[in-house]
Structure formats: C-alpha cells, structure tokens
Length: 481
Image (cartoon, rainbow, N blue to C red; front, side, top):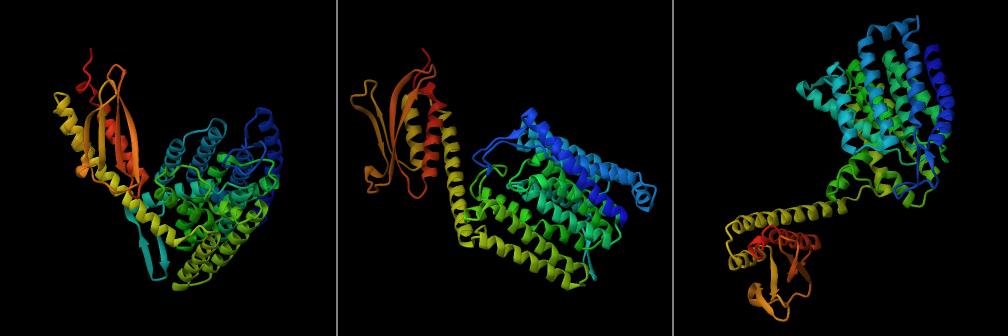
C-alpha cells in the first residue's frame, strides 16, 4: 500500500511542477490555443499540458518498474507487455503533441490510433472473453480483434471529445483512473493499479492549473494519451479478472464522454456531415445553453461521473444477474441526465431519420436518372440531338421548363415545358445557367424552372446535375473553332 500511495502522490507532485514549466515554455514558443467559434475561453491558453501528464505518469511507472520489491518484480515478470503498452501510449502522445503544434488531419490521427491499437492487440492484450454471470461466459474468438480495436479507439476519442471545458476531461479521466485502480487492487492486479494510480496522480497535479479558470489545456497530446492508456489498461484488467465488471466499471466511469460520443456520431450521421466535423451539440454545450456557468457545468459533470462510478462499484460485490441489473440501472440514470440536458429527443430523432431516408432516396434516384442521361448524351452528334437529350434529362429530373434564347437574346429560340406547361404551384425555383463553350467563351443563358416541393436541397441537386450534364458536352453545341 505504501508503494501505491507513493506512486499517486509522487506523480501528482511531479505533474504540478512540470505543468508550471510547460506553461512558461508554451507561452515563450507561442504554442497556445487562440479563442475561436468552438471555444469557450476568451484569451490565448497554452495547449501542450499533456507533456506534464505524460512525463509524470511515465516517470513514476518506470520508477516502480525498477523497485526491488514484490510490485517491481511483478512488473518485470511481464516486461515485454509493459514495454509494448508504454511504447504504444508514448506513440499516441507524440502524435497528439504534433497535432497540438502543427494541426494534423482527423484521419491521420485515426490511423495512428488504429496502428497503436493493432500493436497492442498483436501483443495479446485483447478482449477475448468475459463472464456475464457465474453461469455464462462469452467467448469472442476472432471477434476479439475488432472488439478490442473498437474499444481502444472509441475510448481514446471519447476522452478527446470531452476536453471542451476547463478541467472537464482531466476530472472525468481522474475518476475513471481511480475506479479502475480500486478494482485492480480489489482483484490483486498490482500492475494495473500502479499504472492507473500514476495516471491519477498526474491528472490531479495537472488539474491544479487546468480547472476553471484554466492556465493551461491538456491538448490532444494529453487527452489522447490519457484515453489510450485508460482503454488499454481496462482491457488488461478485464482479461485478468475475466468478468464483465472489468469493462463495465470503466464504461460507467466514462459514461458521459462515451454516451456523448455516440450521440455526436448519430447527430452528424443524421445531418450528413463528416463524423470528424466539429459542433456545439455536446453534453457540456447543452448545459451551458441551459444557463449554467462553465465551472458549474464541470462540477455537475464531476458529480454525475462520481455517482455513476460509485454505484458501479456495487458490481464488485453483487453476483449473477444482480451485476447486470446494477450496470443497466446506472446506464439508464446516465441517459436520464442526458435527457434532462436535451441531448436525447426521441421525437426529433425519429423525424430526422425519416427526413434523412427521404432525402437519401431522392438523391439516389436523381443520380440514377443523371447516369442514364449521361449514356444517352454519349450518342449525341449534333445540336438537335443535344437539345433532345437535355429535355429528356430535364423530364427525368422533374424540371418544369427550359428556355434557350437566340444568340442575340432578343427572342426565345427553344422552349420545353413539362405537362403541357400547366403548373399551379407557386413554390418554383428559377435559375439562369450560363452556357460556355470549350474555349471558355460565354454564349447563351439558359433559363430553367423547377418545383422545390419539400426539399430545397433536392432542387439544388437537380440543378447541379443538369449543369454538369451540359458542361460535360459543350462540344456538341459549340465545336472548337
């Protein structure tokens, strides 16, 4: 127990000292986070606080590895696995540090995370099975690879996404580390206990300067390193304990960032945006919109996280189905908190799903008509055939009319109407399309009308397809002179 206490307090003290040094270095090198549309802060803040967390936790872990006692001996017994774990975590840290300084693309960071997770899996750190109850054990087989990769990458990004307010990610992660360390000590997993206590101490020391008003941010170097180390350590805990609790406890302790990440993925999917696109719809953003101050939002999130982790601790003493009931009950409580914050709106979700399905079906049908028109346009030999192809495409794409003037523009040259020109709708979009020859010279302005119906996006998409069809075949109208 003395070693555990020394590791925790030692890393906390070291992190506090290193953080002060990092603040000065970051300011001198101007590695700061400037206020932006996504940010809450109003001044430049150093953003490489992850250095302090990384150095403090690694230093105490390596020091423990060298101790001439039972704990040090246990570390040296599985030295290859520890080296892989520490090296892969260090790799994630340095990728995050590069991102803090130079700004990497989202897919580059994702590739790095997957690479590190694969290395961990190759070394045998995988979720191969877990006991759901005393009488049933789930064997994953080949699914252990994708499940472990999804777990590690998912937790890493969940912690990263929670780093939106002063002290938020560090505090939640500290609770998770404390929870895992208690479970590790309870199940006599001294190595995991030391890893998590070292990380807990470094987060605590860093929080002295990261809590509102923050003097430094952990940045991607900190959030990704912390998330990755928690994820891989929890996998090792679950593997050694061989029970559902080894994974369930971290899930509950990190319940808010995990659920928030899942809702963010669903939200971006329904809005047809990139899964990596930023937004201001996260849990903490919604609490801010309710009128809470930043400090109060963080404290409230701490309270919910501690409650979820505390209730989850009962799973260590329950048996059989009671363990599952405790887990499900805490998850329901977390979902209720999200419902109160406005993150869960079933009615809006159903409407969004229906709208997305309708739009996707319309766009797919329009693309199909466009591809048919492309094939027909390939056979065009003269202007008359080109006009017929355009009219046919316009009919398929549900345009109402097309008008093409003479070169002098004084009178209409060609006119096409759908349904004999009879249309009573007032919800009509009128667009003038400049027709340019292959030498870039403007020749004519084609005027088109189309009904908007219930989707302005669909109307715009149809106009885009028609203009693309015309631009790809200008040589049929104006041969190069």
